[in-house]
Length: 188
Image 1 (cartoon, one colour):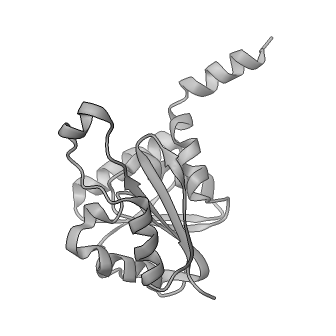
Image 2 (tube, helix red, strand yellow; image 1 turned 135 degrees about the vertical axis):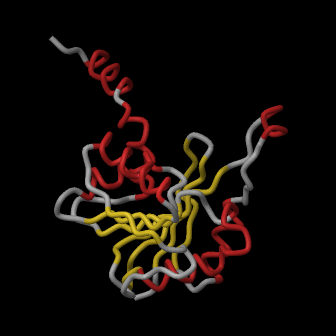
Image 3 (cartoon, one colour; image 1 turned 90 degrees about the vertical axis):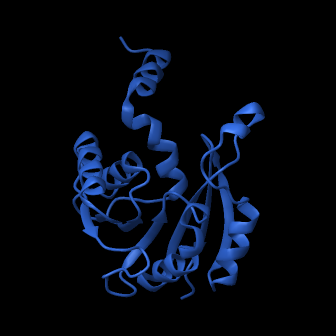
């Protein structure tokens, strides 16, 4: 007989369970069309595809065969289908206003000077009322901060950048495992 504690232990051991809260923060649901811009977190893309299912679509835009292989492996581990498009994030070869959500899994800071162009492309391809979610790395705590190798931007700065780009209802959803989740909606 399974006890509540036994079920929780099974969930904790599941590799997919590690990304369940992250996918919940992004807010995807079955049937959504989700565009992931960049292959920086392939396992997260796999879990997003698992949620969108066969009635939805998850597409990752990334450069190079290595990125495609990593996404393919993550999709296989998640038991999901993911389309990979080899294209620069600054020039998405996708129709405008067709995606329910766009996810920037490595945040704006990691994009450097390309961040405004990538954000503009994300806004272009998301349908009116659709969401854009930025997964921004947070500064590490204590002495680990000295070993931080990824660029970081404060969530409040990301909220301001999303608002300045013309998005509405920009907000910091929350933090999880060293990542801040910030979302905004394209005006209708």
